[in-house]
Amino acid sequence: MDKNGIVRAVQPKTHEKTEALCGGEPVTLGALYARMCAAFAAAGVKTPDLDARLMIERRLGFGWGDLIARPETLVEESALEALEPDIRARIGHMPVSRIYGEREFYGLPFRIDAHTLDPRPDSETLVDAALKAFESGAPETILDLGTGSGCLLIALLARWEGARGIGVDRQMGALEMARKNAARNGVEGRALFVLSDWHAALGAGFDVIVANPPYIPAGDIANLAPEVRNFDPIPALEGGEDGLQAYKKIFSGLGGLLKPRGRGFFEVGFGQAEDVGRLAEDSGFSVRGVHPDLAGIPRVVEISHGDK
Ligand SMILES: C[S@@+](CC[C@H](N)C(=O)[O-])C[C@H]1O[C@@H](n2cnc3c(N)ncnc32)[C@H](O)[C@@H]1O
Image (cartoon, rainbow, N blue to C red; front, side, top):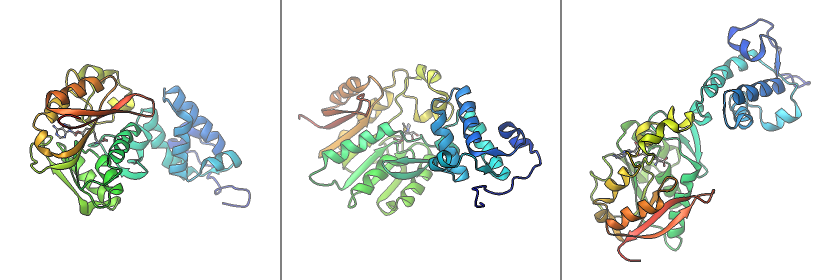
């Protein structure tokens, strides 16, 4: 970059890959941002400005401050070439997190891929609820049913430094990713990942059981945003005809896995908290509370053994 803030002399040759963004002409940072915002908005992307900023930062290394203070900065053609496939992917509704294979959850970095659900901010409600329930003394053992990227188990292990945990999933690809994420977040020595149909392969008792099972009714999948229905794995989303099939399977036989003073935390979909609470009670558990997410939607059902 020279003293005028120009990244490097832009080659005058036209390159077909960057034609769509700059028409083969040198393009400034400000113009690139404006064109990305317009292209994303035209494609129906819900957060065009934010996504354009994130992608420019991630791929080109220019932050929001650069966009505001130095919009006249010329962008190298090689940088445009690198960004072009990302822009196409976003116009095709691939979420930014999937384009770069990264998602932050509970302040920790996670890799994601085609085998794993993209962790949702709403699921942090579950981590908050579990941490609060054990404020006066951390638990020793955690079971995470349907671990996916491992985000729930790993976030809890990161907070409860003396705890150990098992994450199960039916997708081997998800378990491999969860293992990598455990290592990345320094908890691999305390996390075991097991291929299992829910808790079928498990025996021991746990202080904490968490799950964010697939809960979208089968008939609703087609109406989900393309970011979700085309990019999250369907086995991570679909909860049978009524969306409650996974809870029914999980609650049956779960009693022997939860220690007498243990707690279970189950994420639920919109409008499902009552039904899930009833299913838990039908299996002999008590509902200790229902925790709302940041939008005030009942998101996590907390259960324990027997009567409150
Ligand atoms: C909604 S995702 C949750 C992933 C992760 N826990 C999270 O909160 O982001 C549900 C997970 O359950 C897994 N799953 C679905 N059916 C399963 C089964 N029968 N046994 C174990 N895991 C299952 C899916 O592969 C997926 O990883």
